[in-house]
Image (cartoon, rainbow, N blue to C red):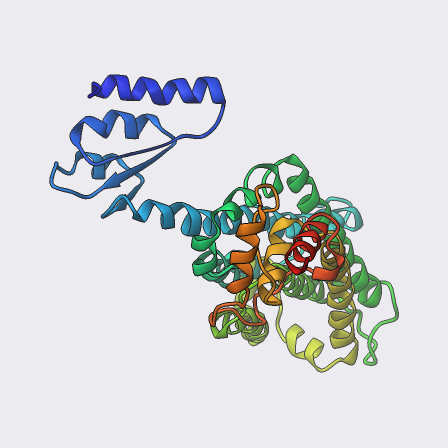
Length: 371
């Protein structure tokens, strides 16, 4: 047996020499120091007190539950939290870029382009629920498959999902989408001729169109990353966009909302009656959609191992670890190559026939079995 301090020193030694995050698991009072020292602490609820449970980040009832905690919940939440972090940065940057672009046209006079009420509701009502549903429920691989194939776990760790390159990628998409969402409505309303009544649109109407494009594109962006579509996802996705138009109608009913900085009285109703407004939304969101679709197509032809694995399961092909595979394991996998009942076409990945990295490994093993 080791003293509590000695257990903590072993954890520190691994942290110092291996330069990796550590996980400590224990069930007794003498494990408390070790659990607190590690980046992740897991406590086992037992008969030796509650100190370890109180000091831990996660609590399980039996040691065998650690497998599911790591391979299933750990892997799925790692993917969700990664996209959650970058998506929040993306949707905030997208709004800020449009404000900056407006500053160039307003000579940086300090005039804010959006109604304060709309701006405050951006992260509360218009873009909040879709990312919450994604971060809680989305999954690209079902739990049964993750538990049965532990070699999938390290495929989504490290620089694959995290790193400066991913931050630069999301920053680029935010800038590109901001250019689309701002300049298409700006040239469609502010630069072109006024409406039939002879009145100028004004920056209030133009920037309201810009903001509508921003909200639609922001929610649309997340839809390209969702792997598990269900009724809740459809509800929050279409509901968030619907709430935007309802809010515009409410803010357009009275001048009392002008205390938020901009008077939207009757602006929304006038825009909703114009064909130009709807065509601008379709053009801006459609062009942004094509940009995201191009990125999805590139991932389709140059997939990572996780996407190859998902597609293999989807097509009922045998799955195995291409780094540590032998003929016996492959034969055993062929007997259970059908996807479980919980998997359907909502769990899709890359095109399996265009898999340059692992495709040859599957093909060679298949030939060995047939031979």
